[in-house]
Length: 299
Picture 1 (tube, one colour):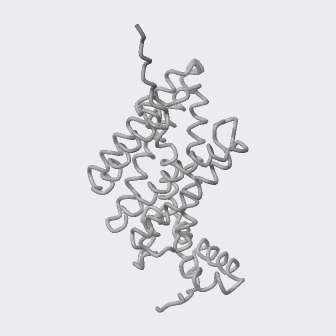
Picture 2 (cartoon, helix red, strand yellow):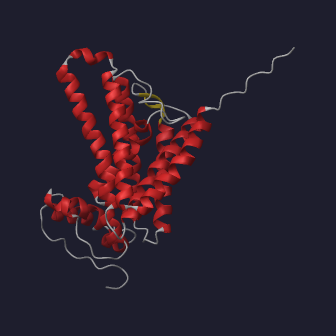
Picture 3 (cartoon, one colour):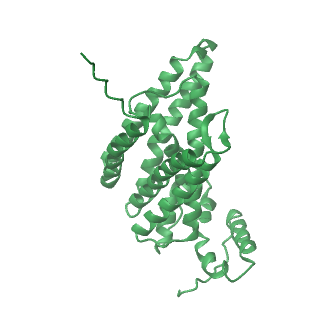
């Protein structure tokens, strides 16, 4: 009597695709509704990440170092989880363009992750940082950046906003921040001798493993003021967000918005563009009013 072989277990890639196909629509739907559902969603996510962080710390053999070591890592975990809650809520809060801004970050981060995975497997080559994450390559990092920028451009077009060159640079910066967050989380897990933060998501490990790149990207987006930049670039008059003004970081907002009046007039026809751009940023940083530069078309 022959025994039929057991069916093969689904591959890790298959599990990743299935998990993403379930999580992505839910995440986008919650972002669409905004408000209380959005806050509750990210509160739950931050709580799970804090639990996973605590699990890593408590289960580590290094816990014998003493209470100071334990307290320092737990405080760091609380800050990490708090940032995961607050940053998306701040970015989504703008009633006019908060949804566009958070979808922009989603698209850049997800496309970066997907493109980096397939580019790294297809091309291979030198390792990005073998001591921290032995599977990541420079080809994957570059492919991820290209994919992230392409996704950012696509969301900008679908939102009906002007494709200003500064948004391309913002997408590139968010893609780089996403990959840096992935490396940071890998370093944290290596510190505790763990491969995954938990096993709650098939194919991904823990929620912390899934949101590592998003956390750093959304933090970068809030710092640069992407929500306000979207408002400015869509033709609406907007000031730097209040939290940036109170922190003395209005110049970061200008970094994201002032170039719109410079790119069109100078980039293709005036070699002094970079010098003028630098002067504008320097004047903004020193608190002086930048000299007005008329756009090519109209007012």
